[in-house]
Length: 285
Ligand code: GUN
Image (cartoon, rainbow, N blue to C red; front, side):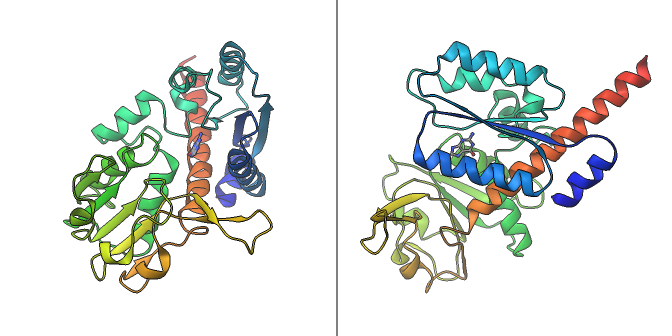
């Protein structure tokens, strides 16, 4: 992404990403720190606005409006989860869709579902597709099983896999907490995507031999050897799955870095689209 940022910067527009973090959830602080570091390393401008947990919804909406109006800000990301007194949907709807580099705004979600490519796609599912494409995994006609139905991962993941284009054309099953026989479905998967948020729930015996396994989970489990007493783990029990799968992503180090790369890609695209709008406006004068 650094090459793209340099190219746009040479044309006079430095892509800008502003991340907003409300409160002091330690996991969110870690994710936001990684996003800020990566955007800086790629040469972007912007940074993180850290607000106290006592911030009111109106204060947050006012900040979003200020960022919406700032031409140096091409991408806005409000880190989730928000404190309980703030409604996430209201905040997401306030972000201008053309600055919604998270792909959470209903307009961008709708475009994804219809197959329009001029919107922004949620970063984690976009990163999973990029991983599959670059690893030579053929999704066409494959049985893809997505475990989890969140708006951030499960639903957009299914929408991407079913599109009639590269990285799509799969036969998609979406499983969730009410699925009657989870293992029945996971054992049918040529491509298994675990996005449930339950530590090591998918074990080797639930995986078809030769399947491609993508682990989106970000959980913690007890580990006495760590200073914190815990360590990061995925939704897949790696040690039993790795002997069955043909390809598998680890946690940490698999999908996580891809999410950040896609955030940078979305921000570069937001900057390019903003430049195109400015040029069109100048041309129409
Ligand atoms: N919390 C967990 N994942 C995400 C993400 O992709 N974007 C935002 N804004 N918050 C998150």
